[in-house]
Length: 509
Image (tube, rainbow, N blue to C red; front, side, top):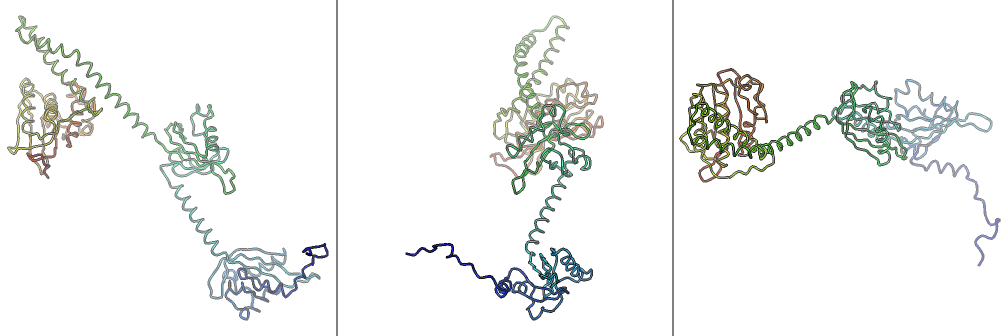
């Protein structure tokens, strides 16, 4: 078999492309408008791509000035002629801009004009290549608008400081949230190193550099810690740093997002402190109950015999009263601990509120009589039933009555009311004591809230009872509120609302 190639002489050079072949090639191209202009800018040739792009048939356009492809505002400033002059001076001219089709519609064109000069240096005209880039420009415009909207979004965010750092950590952009959070305007901070936001001890430890190194190594870095505002004040910040790269994978810098969490941290710390305090009070209550029991028993034994001396009698009675008050205080402390730890166990059963009122009034009557106070009750005859723990409900009303006895002057008036309103039971205790200043009404149910008026100071107490009332009422699916003008003699009224049921235990609406 004869080999396909035997020697170099077997290679044959292809024949050179003649003018006809080249013209056929150009004329058949459809994606580009390729045509010739004479030295004055009149069209001399027209390929298939030119007809597709611009809409003219060859016999419609050959011989006409190429200015017909330009919007009138460009013709008015002489731009087409300027293109030809530049192409003749430099050899070629490139441009992008709006051009016109035959139907008057515009398209975004990429244009290359090349000056044609023969071997003798004689200018023969111009070759012009035009491509329709309308779709590409549309996509670029959408991208630009998207980037602009994103930029406006970032710059308008107020709750987060969002800014960019260069690879060395210098600030290169600054949004409104950053200005609000940190106090610097863009003119003041752009170009500065971001370590200016860190306390000196963090800078000395190299923490800012560590953050950037970690973000560069892992792609992102998160942290919480103290940061510094322009005025030198500190705030607790949540920080996220992300390494930023371009499409080629080159490192451009870092995106940094900072949020001020000072309020959240303060609330968290207060909640933790309050929880620890409640646990301490619970432990204190248990420790106080141990010595209180034998003291109470000893006082009870002393009350069995009449003392020989009036002074001993007075001392015994003082001990009995104080032991009673101390017992109530210890019970309140223990209840606070139980409530916080979720260890308050309520017996869920139908309770007739008239019985709650009777039990609480009976317990509070001796203290009222000792102070010469008048008690009136306004209780509906209609049986009002709720679901709950009778012992705890009596405790709630007892606390309110003891509070009224404590702050109502001798000879004063206390009123207990019980009524029905729609599907709710309303139970209230009112007095004619000094009342509560209006600015303190929102705080009376908080633990240790005592107010600062003279009556409260004289009576003392730890401000625990009303906190227990509030928690116990809530555990019965009710609410408690207080009303007072703060005017001495007009007193205060504490009102409890509880959902009613019928005697069978069904909720009333």
